[in-house]
Image 1 (cartoon, rainbow, N blue to C red):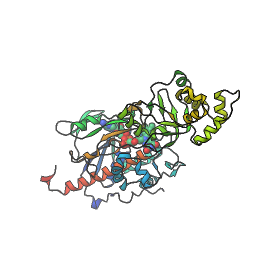
Image 2: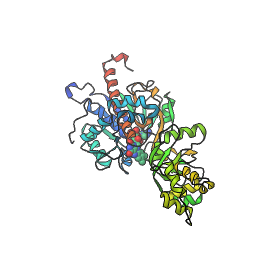
Image 3: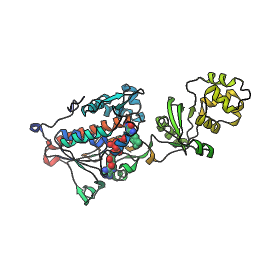
Image 4: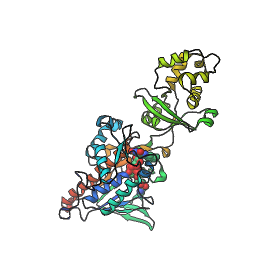
Length: 434
Ligand SMILES: Cc1cc2nc3c(=O)[nH]c(=O)nc-3n(C[C@H](O)[C@H](O)[C@H](O)COP(=O)(O)OP(=O)(O)OC[C@H]3O[C@@H](n4cnc5c(N)ncnc54)[C@H](O)[C@@H]3O)c2cc1C
């Protein structure tokens, strides 16, 4: 578990065979994708300079560790790949080189043990990101990676040089190869603000607009009673269904403006797409997923005597608190006079969602550099020598470790692609180099 050997097919720097020695790689973005690309290049002996606009690298990665770092998922390959939805094929190609098992081995090699939680999610033993990042940065420094924090890339100048804002003022940089791993557009205060989108678009790179993924959704207006009394309350053990999607079981949170939380995130791509197409989405909440409709109906049909409806719901089916308030808010008043209709409402309560919460609040971004813009090595077809990785690519996935797995795998692919590019350009006669 504590060996520091590289994963099986990572090239390693042996001085005699180091054809990359004088080559210089510039990497911009010190999140998991950029750091992984740096590791691949540095292991092969390339001089790596990694730049990040923030005072330290890996800030979003560290935040991901705050509530329990979920690094990957243990489910079999097919369901795992299905989490990437329309980008299943492209992500399968990236994960071929570095899948969930490969990622776990790599984590173990940093001296960090992992375990599989009851949900199948994989966590570092202590659930934290900081020890992993510390061990990784130590390894990268030992490999010679030079980290330049507070260096913010500003795009290209007219001559094609990189414009870099540094504490000493703006500088121009050139490299033999460039890897961009700039992240998406959420949580801008942690460094990834999507400022790169127009710079790449101006150079002809097709970029899908960044959109919130794994985000909350807005309901046109909770009543003041629901908002004031229950905003922030968790809705535990409920199921959410949207036609065309498998129902999800889990929990979410009722907020001032609507719903958020892991259950909603799991369906967020489908909900967002439906809102874009139709102006709204109406998933249904099952407040009693452990009971069948028939069971609920039978329980509610029992005489309630002098008990209030609230008491009856509590005694017969355990509905109280935020669940009872939500039922009152969303079920038609007439349903409360009819056990059969009330049971139906409890099992499929329509929630009218009209908008995503803003991108900056989202866990991750959808959109980004379109895969058609990249060759198989993750190099931009129209910008030879420039590679892209991580969340800045046009894919999305639910929470559950799929995001980080995709970022690590794409960072590794970009690093290997950059190495191959260096090898090919070095082998090519001087006159035919770009
Ligand atoms: C609250 C939260 C919890 C999460 N939990 C999980 C989880 O448990 N499991 C999971 O799989 N994923 C999780 N994620 C998502 C995961 O953290 C991200 O998908 C991942 O960090 C993206 O990696 P990246 O390397 O592509 O980009 P980032 O981590 O965003 O890194 C990009 C880097 O580029 C730098 N940068 C950007 N623009 C410039 C520029 N112009 N010049 C210089 N530097 C620049 C930024 O400063 C940043 O350091 C979570 C995210 C959040 C917000």
